[in-house]
Image (tube, rainbow, N blue to C red):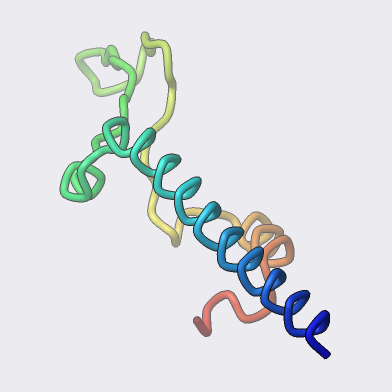
Length: 97
């Protein structure tokens, strides 16, 4: 009986040490990454890098210059097949939660 108590005490201390070690490891990981993380307010006001567009006098686009050629679109402008593909990749309850 004493051997069982000693063994169970050892495993309790081993579990407590594992929990503390995991806590220290997670805290160190967070403290390593925290200076590199942006502020939440900055994430809300992020602007996309859009290319410079050259238009003619009759408002026709002649050229686009830029490293990243992207422009924001509304959800209603996205084709339904693309939306369905993303939902199929995620889950069926995408719009419910």
